[in-house]
Image (spheres, helix red, strand yellow):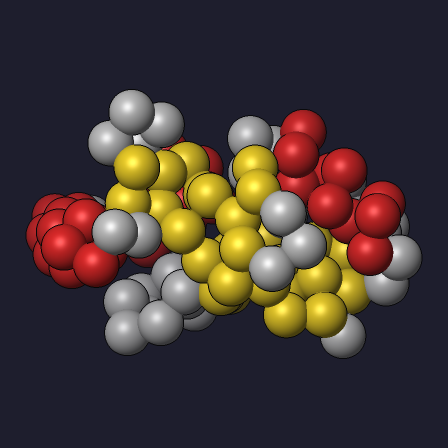
Length: 100
């Protein structure tokens, strides 16, 4: 699963929403502007790692969301929680940033 944000897209897009084996955020273009746009979508963090609200992933997954998707998402969150990569207070999962 990959959350993509460019400096020209108003909102992030979710690529490969059915792939629960990895989660990353890819920023394309002007870094500061792309990070501002991510922030407007509820993604918080720093230049290396961000916290993505689980609800945002569900929303962006759109038509891919079904009972199997939800079960996989729950397993991913449980694994992230066991590793310290899920913040229950924010209901957000941690991901690293990659810059193009």
